[in-house]
Image (cartoon, rainbow, N blue to C red; front, side, top):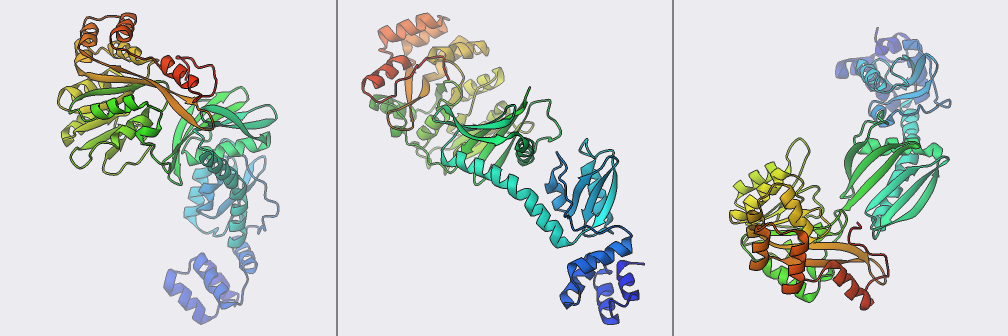
Length: 477
């Protein structure tokens, strides 16, 4: 006998309502309850108690709700099933529709994912839809507001990273602003676990895994958040990289290059082939500089395509592709792009031998290639290509210029770059082909090409009172 027939036999549903419910939907519990509530003759609690009698399970008003650690309640919210207490041998679950086999299957599946509930039997209770929805709102409100508040403040302060660090009795949250970690707030340690779970759910990480590093990402308000977890003796440390796609692109004239550097960079950007390489540690502004140069190119007459990890700015009239692990990497992306008739290619980073050789090949076949590589200075970039098995002759013949840069604090507020530009002329070309070492290349560039190092640029800007005094070191990031 269905719940609908039970109500009919009890005289609670007249013939007309009975036939309407039976013919319209087969008399499902949810439809019957909605129909009866619509008549005004019943309240939610009364119908829930009738379900309790029919299904022979207890009714709960959820006043005895006790949150179960580590469970992701967002999964259960979609099916209106609420695990509200875990005993020694069973987990108590409140549902609105106890007759739904689909709900029971999903509850079993979700609870099996957590060590705390995977082996416990399930004891069901009936609750009203309103009580369930209200309880889910209460569960989500605190952590959602906390996470949203942290992310909002990080974006408003132009932070590049958020650090969540577990201590003995507190959780320390810090923001990296203008390259410096600054204290943001302290939380009680009992809020730590749920905060981490909320972030892991957003980033689609395994919330049950706490012993191994994980990485993931999520989008919110057109901002890309990259989440990294790392196990420590106090618990998992979380770092969130903030990539705000709403920020305006900085023009090449406002980055910190000198007028003669801007003139030279603008000139070589018009070349039809060759490589323009930017180097420096993570967070030194390399990608921003390249984007600013790409913006100066006539996009109507030249096809510009990019391979990035991640896409940090959205630029109109440029075809941008994001590298995705297991789907497309830099080397495969270059092969594909070369079949798309590009004029200018931006390769986000050269990390391995195959990508390095593909980038050189692209520059040899009539394409202007912008790319980045990790090295301490311009001459280190040459050594890095050698380490990646690119022949000296190909390095020399295809590199137009190497720009090395750092971000440093300027007087007032914000940061600017200090930089060096190594212009590859015929004499330097010959020395690279002859496998001269870094020291000899540097000495020649300084004596014969009037090469100015990053340190020279830093000292000049300090003398002009443009930079804050700091312990600037070439090897620092």
